[in-house]
Length: 448
Image (cartoon, rainbow, N blue to C red; front, side, top):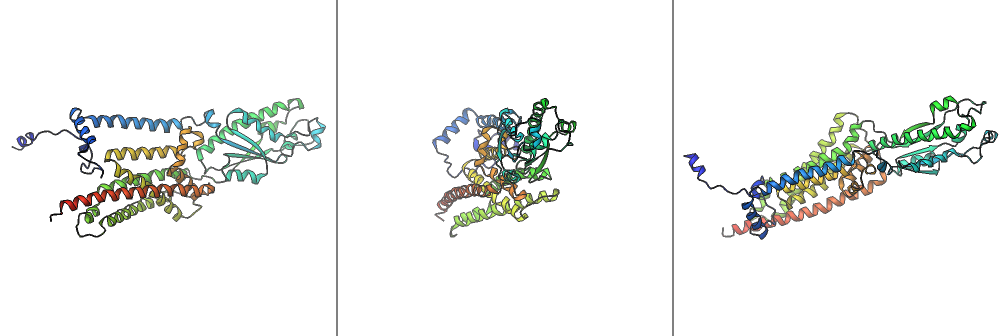
């Protein structure tokens, strides 16, 4: 009997709304009697699987494009055209060939081997600039992120090299040292690529130097073996790579949290009907908006707390600022995500919202400079500077290691701008949505 009753029910065409997990939750502006909706319903009758076909096309296409941009963008970071974006500055304090020995063996008194580093600029593997200055200048250039690596050429550079010629029998072998400055905290992987490239270039420069002095009898074997010694100095060392990994993964997790929070509080929020569907409640809309804002804030604060604690559970964590600064900043960043995703959830059905929200999250991830700096990626990745996640990654490096202090104001303003604009827009759309629901409820119950 049961089977007969069920089979007697006429089959319905699967509409787009029934693909949605919550078919009654249409955007507040959705009008079932609109011409567009009527056209869609007619199309569904002719092509029942039209929406499923669209999703089967769009989702793989989005996955392909995102993977192509991200994987393709970091596939060959050491390609010549990308390495040429890296900037190196050589701070030359070399006094030149001032020793009487130079004249004794027929060398020009104007000889300054430190200036020979300018030849690296013509090889297309980076932008090399030679300037005059001291060691403090070389350190300041890295501190202000004016270049990826700075080399400090000491005053006695030329004299020390000349003293290692075989023709100078009176002197023993002498180390020739150049200080190399960089900051691992700026971009750990990018700095390592820059160091490897510079090592190859300086080796070539040394071989050319040896060749140029063959007519003077060549250099002592010890100098040929040890070459010019580049003493590495990292202003801010990444002691645990896991902590550097957290500088961008933490914000991915926070953004996922904002997507989940927007969904939960939009589709499952019991306090909404508690005030909206009661006649005698004063300021029902204001109370509902305030309750939802407070709920979202509490959820994201808990998520921020959990994500900020995870690194502390894994091992040693360096923090130039306090833990409170990390927690506050995570929560501050999450406000921009809440604004964006709460705005989107009011504009789209569930599936469309999920596609747009995930696409924007991935776009931020691939352009935030977390894995490799944009200098080693295609020009498209510069779009990330406008997004909150890019600024968040830069700012957390300042909180952890003190890296990029001069960007702090810009980082805060960009994230604050996203939070204020999109939270205000999402609150306004929520106000309109509640206004429509309130009006419908009062209309239905006007006779009561």
